[in-house]
Image (cartoon, rainbow, N blue to C red; front, side, top):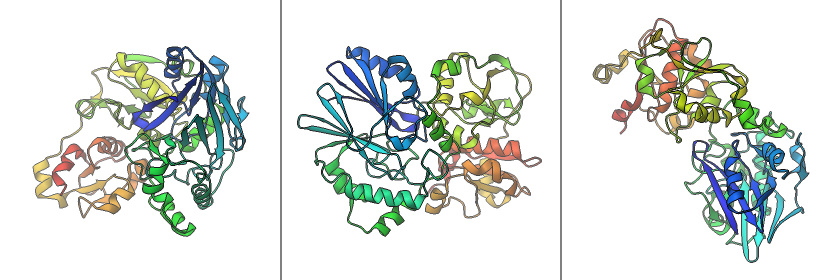
Length: 443
């Protein structure tokens, strides 16, 4: 089969194109559809189908834009309750794509409306499992308690996932290739392996979900230790249910001004070192300094959906790239303007005396902003107080202010954001960022 996998690293997202006899189907597309058009052109084919395995929580999909551009039919489970033109694609339904057969299996568990797509051509079988089956894991069951057309408690979805794993893949061959919607680094599961595909046989042998276990044992495992839920997840489920606006018109009218200032909530994407040399007072430093930086995740965890903000960027040349990144999670409509900074009215971040901190750690309040699951695996400082980054804007008032504050994470990226949040929220107490010097304290 002619299958192309597309990866968006910051969200560990995989989308797919399948081509046969001049026809293309797109599965779980990301917000920017241009790469799918390029694939169709390169294969001298037309896009005739866009399939959503479920309404995604961690990114905004371009299924509606592709439909409007190409006329392709959108397929998804009727349980999704889509507000856009679509055709239901549930168990027993089939799409013919040239020589390829695409059949749907209802595989609830991550969401009530999840499907898996079974693609066959001759003796070859491929499974597009969405967020149901990952490599080494299955999708988390706790994202639909307050979002989507069909809402369900985490325990209900965990039970559905058990039934899905026990019953829905039974008749499929071991050599079927598994193509998930996410890889390692995604928050849609907790133990995804660093692989972009597998076989069903390998997952039957190595994935914890397929091992012999009772329903209670399965449910206890899947419900325990799931990562935090970013604020934007439910917001994106609802955007994807409704169908997102076209990308380019959504970002082209956002005001941009060079060498200026701003007020209100300010997100500064520049590198930590540059930010510390001079930034607008109260800015939050969420770095977007590489494609691997988890900018989208932390933007959508720190800034609430529909909360207006200004974006500070490093140069005009990077504006479009960064607007695309904001739009990946549907936050472009709440972005009031994009600016670069003038040289006036900037503040510097005070540098920690590392030698003094190492010698006298008790003279500081140490704030650990790692995720709860990370802290449970071990602390770097016995006296540290835990305030996960995604909760920090709400819990900052609980942090003692009688001593200078030192903020740390696991590697330095998150502490840049965390320390800048506390510098904005806490008055009269110095806040330091331990940054990458945390590595000096690892055993």
